[in-house]
Length: 349
Image (tube, rainbow, N blue to C red):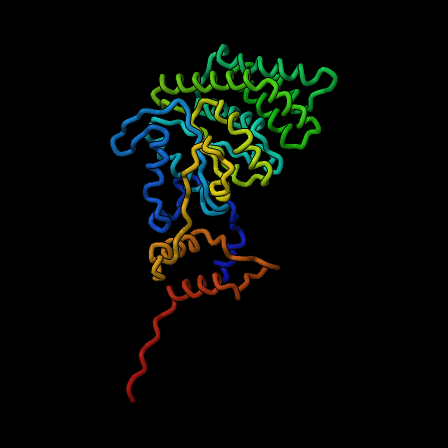
């Protein structure tokens, strides 16, 4: 038990598992989410059963769930299945890693989406003609000149502007921009306003880039449509959540692509969305009790598996596990029960 508890201290409880991780525990039966993947796939025009495929021009799907409920882990698993179909090329955009979640607007989120798409294609060995990349690069050049008539660019953004051609050069350009936003540049508000002022041109350039990427993927027999998976957008501040998903929904919809956004559960039920974004996908919680009060065996089995594979719910304080915590007591008892010999019945005198 001591060795086991020693390992627990190394667990990163916020860590989402990649697709195929051996620590993954199937929770579909425990959640009642057996049809969730098929529902998501059909939103993007693909029937996993018949393999029929009629993708819409665009679809922006919100994936709701409590923070820490496993949305990212499940979405990565869904992304793996979508990729395996060779209908889709799923690109994960980790906004928590690339941007400042405490001050996040759609302007920099779109930059991160474009950066992630180009990074993934470059890593996978795909190329795009310079004529395809030119509209985005030209938009940057025009907007940056407008923004910096009397001011100097930050070092990160200046590096990006001076980068070379091709996908690698454009990746550096986007990386410089998102890095400048994340580090709390004093020019952040001004850049956002410039992007808003020139947004129509940016959206057109981004859409052209996505169509070209899809044409390249289709030619290679890899996929027909790009899917952008934005993770971390459920962890924004309350006012930023309102701005991002409600007030700026039209700007998100202007990007003609297939996209998934993680979203906080309260947003689904507070009446603010207004029907602009697709908002009926919810990851249910693991059920431990049935409506009639009986024990949900599938839920308890899944929870036990999660605790044994990823004991993230245990609390750690001053170097000692809180053995008084009921989860710790239950887990310890479960482990000891699997190794301790069964007591022998007393013999009759």
